[in-house]
Every structure is written in structure tokens, then in C-alpha cells.
Image 1 (cartoon, rainbow, N blue to C red):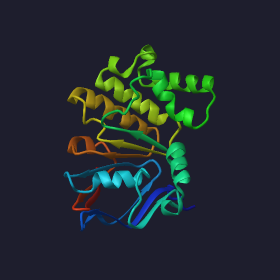
Image 2: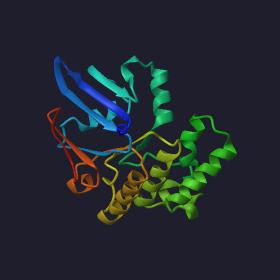
Image 3: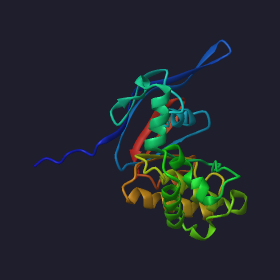
Image 4: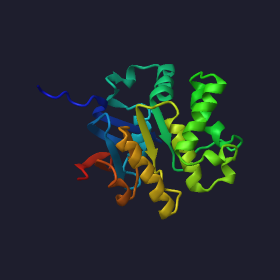
Length: 233
């Protein structure tokens, strides 16, 4: 009996993105095509100006391509309204940022609750879920602390817990170790590795080869083109 292929989570076909700078059109992405399947762990690399930030913005539905197709679980995002794009990000995506993007006035548990608030979860249920996630990232003893009372590594742990709150189909990590020392960075990458082993689908942007090699596959960009797309093992 033939095995069914792992479901496709994202598909890009001849995707381009251009910007107007004055009277000049700049091609940031020039015809990218690739797919990502459920449970894959993909690293995107490239020098500054290669197009990786533009690509991540499109993959996270924070921006739309100029031409070509970007489909999420079979749906072409270009066909979605702004409201539908917001719902897609809210319900199916989790984001981990280099600068953590925590809300300074909120505690650890309240920061983790934020995505669940926007999903309409009732307060007690939100709090229970956030406390469980805080425990899972080793911060059960810091629930009431504010971001300024935490180390960089602890703030990134909160960000990971927050990204998991909505049980996302796809997790985006944008330079997740960029603001951390090497020892703390290894801890955070270890957490992402564990998420991958648990079957999560991850896309990580990084400029560090040693970090990228934790992924199953590395796509390297240069001048808006895919110049390498290779498995890491």
C-alpha cells in the first residue's frame, strides 16, 4: 500500500516582490518556487539585502507578493481579504522575533495570553493555558514578572510560549538568537529543536550557519533568488 505524502503547508510558485524607490523599481524577490510540508524545519539564510526579510514578511502574511502564488494549506493568500489574512495569522501562525516583542506593561503570563485574548478565549481558560505554557518553558516561577525583570533568554522563552498559545500550524522564528549570547542562544535553539521533534512546522531566518544547521533543510537567498536548497543531513 503506497504511503500518503506529508501534507503541504506552504507552496510558492514564481513568487516576486518589487518596491518603488523614487522612480526606480527594486526587485526584492525574483521568481521563488518551493514547498514546505508539515513537520519540516526550514532555515532561510542570506546576506543583508538578499531578500530574506521580505520573504519572511510574505510567508507570515504581513505583506503580499507582487506576482506569483503563495498558498497556505492550499489557499492562495492573494485571494484573501485583510480580515481573512488577520484571521489566518491569528489562528494558524506563531511568531518569534529577534527583539522578543513583549508588551512591557504586561506580566509573563499576560504576555502569553495575548494571542488567546484575540481568539476570544475566556479569561480563566486563557490564564490556565498561559500558566501551563510558562511552566513548559521553565518560567513557572516568574509568572508575575515584567519583561524588564527578565534576562534576554527568559524573554525569548516567553516569546516562544506566546507563539505556541494558539497551537499554530506554522511557527516563524526571525533571528531568534540574534540578541542573545552564545550559551543562551544554544538553549533557545534547543527549544526549537524540541518543537521540531514534537512535529511542529518551523521556518527560521538566521544569518548563522551553525544555527541554520539545526534545521532539516536550508534555503539560501542571494539577490532575491534561491541559490541553494539543500537538506542538512
